Image (cartoon, rainbow, N blue to C red; front, side, top):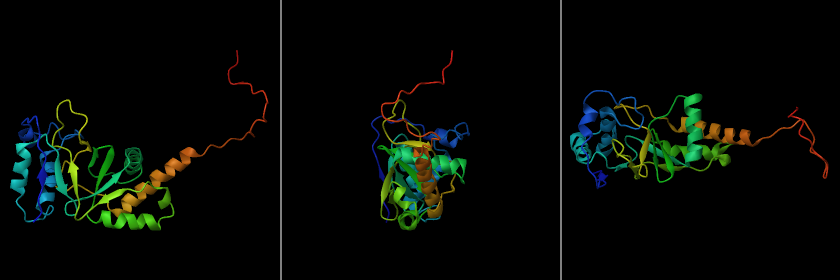
Length: 219
């Protein structure tokens, strides 16, 4: 039986009902909607189609809405855990050139990209086979048997040090990238880094000891 650990919040504040009334926060990326909360809680019940007690899982979160939670991976989602700078490049590629991303969180100096179940098992093997795989900072992949800390339903007032949502879930069935899409994003991000490091000049290097004048500024 899968268990879920709910972390204690030292300053409880009842914001959970606001998730269920109206949609004024629906387009705020840092705030989870009611449907998004139901999807996250489903991870504790065996996924969106599981038979666990979804109401009980939601009730536990309702009691501490500003608390982060530890949820199991492998049923509702897997996690691709990357360096935040490289993760930002991945997100840029996913949103500018690809299909977009699923939910994304930040925790303890890492970026957590939510992916389709099974991604944690397949992505490392795909990176091993990929020509550009050695250029990709190796991600930490969390799947079946692992658990991760997810941010609270709503950000705590004035708290910027804890886990937080960069792209919060807002539907009961969010689209999640699979291993092939995550591989594509990794490779595109690695190539963008390599391209930025290339400097091409049409002029030969100056000879040692030569006087170099700046002619770009004329009176």
